[in-house]
Image (tube, rainbow, N blue to C red):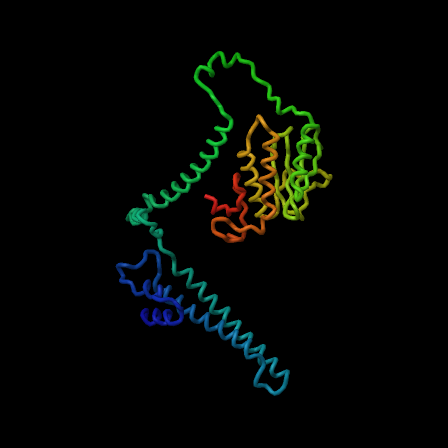
Amino acid sequence: MIEDVSSDACSDVDTSPCWATQIILQEPTQQLPGVNLEAFSQAITAIQALRSSVTRVFDCLKDGMRNKETLEGREKGFVAAFQESLHSVSRDLGELERLSNLVGKPSENHPLHNSGLLSLDPVQDKTPLYSQLLQAYKWSNKLQYHAGLASGLLNQQSLKRSANQMGVSAKRRPKAQPTTLVLPPQYVDDVINRIDRMFPEMSIQLSRPNGTSAMLLVTLGKVLKVIVVMRSLFIDRTIVKGYNENVYTEDGKLDIWSKSNYQVFQKVTDHATTALLHYQLPQMPDVVVRSFMTWLRSYIKLFQAPCQRCGKFLQDGLPPTWRDFRTLEAFHDTCRQ
C-alpha cells in the first residue's frame, strides 16, 4: 500500500526523483527517527485530494453559470456547486492539518559538511556538540566583528598608558578640563549652518529647549526625519523616523524617546548609533558632525539603491539599510559581513 501511495505522489508532484518515495520506501532500519511514515503516506494522499478540490473550485469559477434555462436557475446551480467545492477544500485542508501533526519531524539536525558528523552521535541528547558548535561559530563571528570596531576606535583615541603612569604620580596629576565640551553656542550654530548649506536636499532645524544643549531635526528629502540630541558639538543620541511620522510630543517638543513604528527606520536608528561610535575624534568635533551628516545623507536613496553584494532591492521585506562608513555603499544587514 505504501508503494502505491508513493508512486501516485510522484506522478502528481513534478519532482524527479520524488523525495516522498525516497523516504517512504526506506528499509525499516533506515527510517528517520521521529517520523511516522504511515501518517506521512496518508498526508500525501490528503495533499492529492486537496489539490483536486482546489482544481474543482477553479473549474467551477471558469465554467460559470451554464446548462440552465432561466437566470435564477443558473445562479442557484452555480452557488450550490461553488459552496460544495469550498466545503470540500475546507474538509481536505482540515484532514491534511490533522495528519501533519501526526507525521512528526526528524530528531537529528541536518549535516553541515564535516561538522555534521557530530550530529550522528548516538547520545546527542546528552552531548549536543553539533548545536553548540553552531552557536559558538556565530558568537565567534560576532565577537570578531565587534572587536574590530573597538580596536579601530581605540586606535583613533591614541591612548598611551603604562604601569608607571597608573601609580601615585598619576593620581596627583591634575586632570585636564575638556575644553570641547564648553564651546559657545554661537560656534555650534555656525557649524550647523555651514553643514546645512553643504547639502541642499537636507534641512536642519536647530532648537535649544533645555538650555544650551542643541537638538536638531534633520529632514532628508521626503524619505526620513532624524532627531539628533547634542551636547555642545558631541552627538549623544539619534532617532530615525519616517517622513510622515509625528516627531513631536503633545506639548510641542521633539520626542526623543519613542521609536519609529516601522522596522526599516528602527534598523536605520541602530546603524546610526553604530555610526556615532565609528566617527569619534574629540580633538575636532566639527569634523565628526560633518562626517556623520555626510553618512546620513547617503540614505536619500534608501528605497532606490540596490544592495552592492546581492544586487537585490529587498531582503526579508527590507531595503538595504546599512551604509558603509567609508564608501557609503548600500548593503543589507546580512550582506555586509
